[in-house]
Image 1 (tube, rainbow, N blue to C red):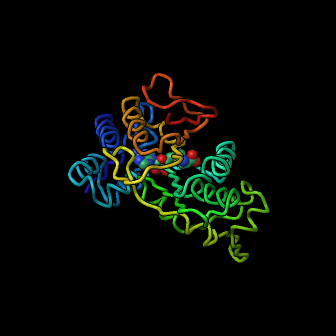
Image 2 (cartoon, rainbow, N blue to C red):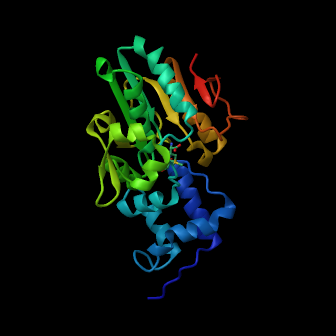
Length: 270
Ligand SMILES: C[S@@+](CC[C@H](N)C(=O)[O-])C[C@H]1O[C@@H](n2cnc3c(N)ncnc32)[C@H](O)[C@@H]1O
């Protein structure tokens, strides 16, 4: 059987249309090399050509190989305490508005490998006695690969020491000197429910509203109409006076949405 490992423009277009429709990822025309390099190891193993791969994803949009393809095409870069101003804000919220609530719900809506929701959990422990509240963090992502890593709560020593202050490492992680890995403690992990969730779903299935949604560094992959739908869905699922936080490098200029910008990419439902 002849193996054709080159991605032609037609198949590239079909792959990018598929991921756009399915998960809202907007792969620009100049990113063909990226798609090719991330999927190339599947050619010669699962498929004999990119054309076969394309046929597969359209025929079986929900199967595990298609999910693996989506996992490979998403960009999962993240780290603990990324954009620390947002965690300072979270602490302020919990110590002021949050303490008047009985039920506190926080959603890390594109949680990647878990650094963001674990940072939320650690910050919350530092801010208040969360056991006095009905307190829960939901952490979701479209990629099952990152969710497995997130759920494990296991991180390389180097990554933890670079981003987490030493006093918080001592309080919230167990260290394994044999493999230089840190495991998040149960008190942190128990606050979080990890789930697979596609932000493109419509409507959203949640019964309760959130105090704060972290929607950081994911909209960069969405085109404006997708962003508008997403932001409207978010609005319906945030408490009156609650907040939506996007990445500091992101902008909602030119995007119609119902939120009021406060500061530092923090938007409020008013
Ligand atoms: C760059 S990471 C951001 C992680 C974290 N929020 C941060 O700011 O550090 C973007 C994440 O968005 C996820 N993602 C992309 N499209 C998505 C979608 N349609 N639904 C849910 N998650 C999605 C990717 O799998 C990836 O893990």
